[in-house]
View (tube, rainbow, N blue to C red):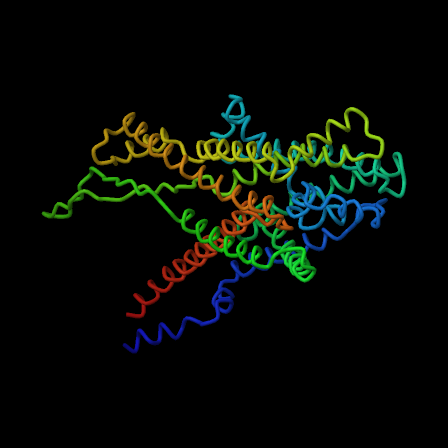
Length: 450
């Protein structure tokens, strides 16, 4: 009993004190916090040649449009027109293009199978695509700002510093996200999006309180929406932790001396939502790209035929519009199936089980196992796609129907909850690794002392 109490007392009650025992993990957490601070500071550095008063008037006129949603994903950088106004969306769009092409183009598909060298080459293509997309988006954004009279200068004196600043900010965010993934905790791109959404929450809350004070918004409706947000969060946690465990038996019997042990039993866990938060991010990025271009280019005092067309596109793709909802839901379902096919291959899993002497009870190894896994995976992916579509669209429908003044909908909640869960799981994995390493060092020392 004394030994048990001493070991319990050795564990500190403060989690930070416990984490600080492991220097490598503590350094990763410090790097993550420092990177997020740099990101938030950079979102306040303005692009040269922008009139802040005219810019504020533009966002007041376009309150509730796609610009508000894009501004939330950029953490307010778009409203301030900072050098990070493009956000991480160019990198996400480039990742979508490279991943989709890698499933179609044989040469890119071969790179995926080359291991680390192939992954580096695909990352190189993604960076090049990010640079090209950032340049195009920055050019269209600057053209829209110039056409609306928001700039302090015109011509190349405005285009060169403004486009250069926006492209540099997008590339810096891409580099920062990769550094967080490598030297921090969690996925870097997801952490940057999470920080952007969290940074927009205080202003949304203050806006809601102000509208309630001015009697322009019903307090009961806001409370109902808040309760709905809690329910959606609970549903996300429940579904993200849900698994379908397929039993797996190993045919080899172990023999030690005269004793023969029975077959080993294990299970193959398949998550309901194997694609994670990627489909929602991909769908949002693809829809915000044409809508934001239409918003910037289409708004003009004397619009041409092309600008009128872009205005129509921007209106049709505004959050809450029927076309936006249909395209958003369809893209989520498509990317759920597409990304699940990228991360899980029933054929490879069936071959690995066969090589290791494992089998699913009642299913023949090889082709029959592959078909069975494919059948189970399709049903799970269908449930996961419907769940994600409902989570993302339901709050958006309520917002547009009852005039909720902010865009903290299902997509934002999904991203925040999934990112936090992934961060906690990675943090626990690091702690378990360090604890196992400590135990392997302590056990030999105890044996020597005996």
